[in-house]
Image 1: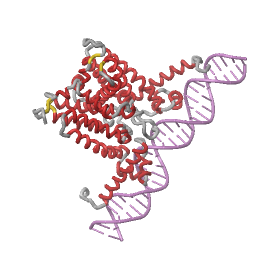
Image 2 (image 1 turned 180 degrees about the horizontal axis):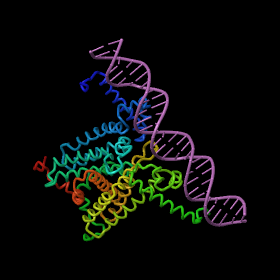
Image 3 (image 1 turned 30 degrees about the horizontal axis):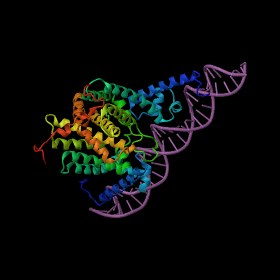
Image 4 (image 1 turned 180 degrees about the vertical axis):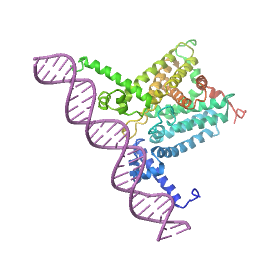
Length: 213
Length: 213
DNA sequence: ACTCGCTGTTACCGTTAGTAACACGCAGGT
DNA sequence: ACCTGCGTGTTACTAACGGTAACAGCGAGT
């Protein structure tokens, strides 16, 4: 009875929610993840309690905000991952897609990867639970693709998840470092990472020349 | 003239600083990174202003605290990295050392990897500058080892840094996920990651059987 | 006319980082 | 003996933040 209202005010509320999210987006992109609820409310032309009515608390707002961007990013990554090309090309293209995204909008990236903190984090053992949902989602996504595409023998379900999270972490950390220092252009970074994934670390010669040791 | 005092009060001040750091350590390990300055001061048996006299601000305290732990962790990683064994064994052993460390003291790990936030972060463009110093240091450290040990041909300086940060990121993300979900034991994770670095992603067969597409 | 649900407000609370302003004690130089 | 400097410590405060009443208007459906 009460869930099937749709009285027209519901639609208005949804629209309002989207407007508030867009205002929050502007503020967060301008001021970074430390934007205060007051600032966001001011940007939206209203005051705090309305934000709290819509999103519960700051974590709720940030979660809603993050989901939009993660959904968008994940969609484009999925496209690169599913493209009809040979494996190495797909991997390189996915890396490039990710790096292009964080290069184009570093503020969004920073917000997604360092989403502040839970206000009273249960004191303890849930390490990484609130850390970076985007990383987890990307890892799981990639794991799924790996598992359904590759034949990894027994234990493939676990192994694909290890690889998924590992590769995503590699991409993330390298991208973070690259974005901060800009030591080379994007293509070079993509090439280097792909080489790494393709076993060049194991294949490289020792510097001393002799193979032993 | 004034820097060469060493009046004996200096030594006392240094000792005091260390005591305060240890108290802060206890609190952070007990309460997580959200520990308040008041709580830390109380644990040390004093009040806030003294902390501020010693460390400037919360960021200063946290930086000092982080440096101790990162130094310790980096030292043990260096040991594993420099051990006299074949390359794959060294890599696996380094991964295992890291994972054992975060497994043994997840609180420390959480503190180091998610070091709260700068209180008024300069609004903007310094993406990742304040993010995770430990990750950066590990990346640079590994890059150095890679560069001085491996023959990567031209551009080896840049490539080794790409790999250093990439591998560290892989280790970090996989460890974070593993610590949260515990999907397998440590040895299995180490094996999976080492396989990944050894090119098993490139070598694996397609699931559909046919190699083409 | 009346209620329901959404809009919005002002004014407040508790906690936190950070800062005066003040006071004690203990060295050393005169 | 006296004072000066410095490190120790305190209480009491500010400013900002997340979050929460309590209250009021407004438009649509019955």
